[in-house]
Image (cartoon, rainbow, N blue to C red):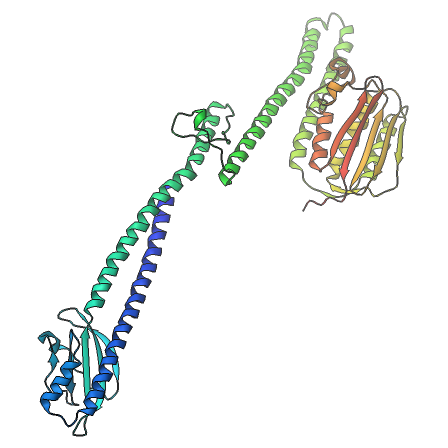
Length: 470
């Protein structure tokens, strides 16, 4: 069953049940109120009759019959019965059909509504005990057919059925209109998703207007209300933008990675073919070829390791309390041992440098930034740390060639290299800063660069303090 049918069926059935329950309650409440009024009215007549009989014990039988006729209901009867159920005086009635009503001798006053099995008519019956002239207790039974009540209830039944139709039909129409209003954007969303799947054109939904009919015209554009469907379409468009961006990045990443791997593979293959052709005749080529093959193999290994590192950062999420000062100091000590001829100056202000994160990932950041500073400069490298209430700041400054302003926004992109020739000499892959940026942003931090050509570069790492990832 489609969602449209479910909406129509649910709303129609729900409204039908509401109508049935409410109209049934109205019917029985009205019937109870009206019948109680009929009984009260008949009870007043019966009381008057009993008082009249009490005052007329000494009058003749004919006069007593006239008295009963005076209190006779228009559509009923009056009878007086003894405890044996026999009529003391003839039944007073205008219609012989009322004589078949059930007799009921009682010593206490009763009132009820009964239905005649033969005619199906409803009767209000009042029964009151009276002391007769001979001292016996007899029962005065007054009955009146509820003609007007039955006609009123029948009319009420027709009115309720008509009102039910008047309410239910617009409800069905409204549910159809509502389902169309709700499902048209969803259908449009579904169609757009299918086109994106089959055509891969990254089509988005026009959220600023809606369409009237199949042909869209600018004159038919109406401003959309900012409801949940509007928000859903906005979210869908944001998702399409994100997917498109990630897909393009993935394509660029695969293309760049393939290109970066293709170059050393081609060099290795070329030197292997050179050895095969001339290695036996020219032994001096062996050292050159082996050195080149070893260098390019190292380059490939470094590239693969960094690619794996990128993938690893996506899956690792183990975090703990980390002291950034200790992490930076350990990395500096490692480089001091590896590059004893280079000076790495470390300045730090007193403060709290505790944060929350993955310590193995955080170690990669100063490693990458210090390695770049050593690789692309000849002088000292300055590392400084300071903090405020919310953040810690670590600055990595070198005195190399610097980075042009047009390149500063791109250096954190994967495989982007300011000078490919110089990077090939130093063994760069263009992935280091991209890895550092991804790790920093995953920990809620930020990295920026300040640089001028010929004046060196300063990378500033900002990291949140006391972040908890629960």
